[in-house]
Length: 64
Image (cartoon, rainbow, N blue to C red; front, side):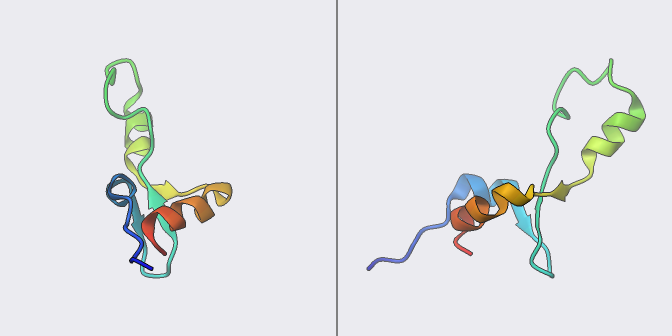
């Protein structure tokens, strides 16, 4: 059976921490920033954990 390939799109969007948690960037940060509060754009710039219901699917895409 051939090796399973990593989904390259997913590999660019998700990172695995040293303790094995999955992190992702937040949405709503790419454009139309003038009307968003500075505090909001700073909050959106930080990475967050992948939702518990999505972890299994993301791990499969990453080959974990």
